[in-house]
Image 1 (cartoon, helix red, strand yellow):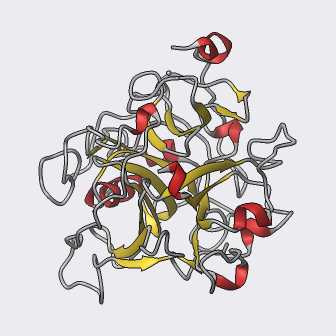
Image 2: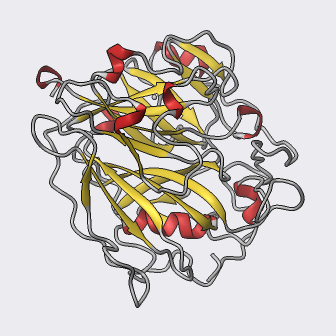
Length: 366
């Protein structure tokens, strides 16, 4: 299967010219569409934005947790099991298991696996309770560059004391087709229409299209943009289903990053559900539509692609022996065992890419 305004707006909410670059390099991922937000090719694949339950589980964009205003509600209900796409299924497919340290005695993250339509290789899915977890964007010397930053690898002990999970960010900025704002600075101008991961001063998080779903407000602390929306209104976007899969980044080949790239490649994505949970998906041999379908099946109503290719996609949960112990490489677990990066990555000085952490909220912040 083929698959903000406020005063801050005066500083940087002018839409910048789009960033389009030629594909190349093992870590470069290029946007090759002709216009941001418009499908590069109107032709869609066979399983596009139909109401078929295999491609869509929700069409609402309501967020009861009111994440867009930066308000965090109570802890969320435990996620229900996901219906597999294929038959036969793999062991435990769609069944959630708790992961990472407990927050006030309860799990804040659940994980499962699903095989996407038309595939035999499972992708990993992590569901994160934004009522129990606080998000933070860490910035790298290469992505986005322009430091120094207060929050950058390696994660320091003060933050490791509450760290529950960390996952990869997006493309290198010269090919991200969007902007980057953090720690009170515009690193790259924000682009109207770009898919955006937004973090607020209280640690809440949202995903959507900049300028329509999400806007600059005084309590926005970080905006990480990457390409265009992959999921909107609980459905894969037309561009997700376009035959022009190259618009979603330059990929590596089947066995190396030398030579032509392939459509079905390691990809990661993130989105929010109708009740405000954050969902992360990563897996091998995924095309953009399959990534979108996995996000939708997990309940995502607004979603975006993050980084791609084997070296960059990773989510790790941490579960130190003591409730207030420090997260570290020896108590971390990968969402998927096959990812190149792992529990030690975010604690290394050499890690030069941006990433997002999810940490336990104290009772006073909930």
